[in-house]
Image 1 (cartoon, rainbow, N blue to C red):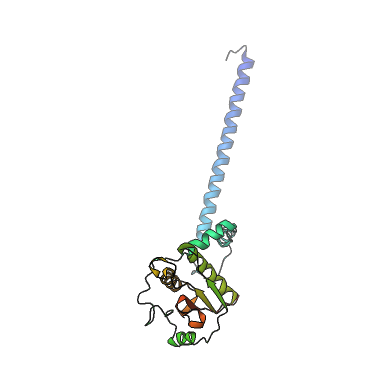
Image 2 (cartoon, helix red, strand yellow):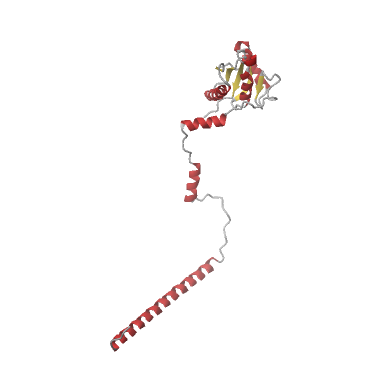
Length: 223
């Protein structure tokens, strides 16, 4: 810096002294704050040195973030569309054609069956028409897939309506290849897989004979 005269030199020296004085004040203030922080920390440690942790409590403590997560997890899912509902029902209720019924039916496999835990008196009463037939489903003319869907939907609907006893007509097979009742064996398999079914027996002559089954359904649950 060019100095024109001694006046400029004196002014420059004064500025340097002022800057040095300000730096000294700033340093002293910083050291004072650090000293106070150390003293406060030491005071706090001394105050809590005898404090012991309390045992865990099972008391519920409300925490906004966790409560929001819990409510979000419990929030109902988006309502299904009609198409989604239909697809879900089909997935959950699809009955197998190949379910092994051997050993599940009573002494006469083609005549009766009862769910596990159901006493033999239920089958006897069903044979004697203790429960009157309230409705029926006729499977004549239906192929296997359509008959399966019809049976599943019909049993679910009947149970929800509170119907206890129904007749399902499967035919005697006169019109099928070999004259065998194709749907009869499949119907047995479908029925034993259906939660709504308590028992079934071959229908008597007045109810369709061996071309039909009389099916007892579980009582509808109260809402």
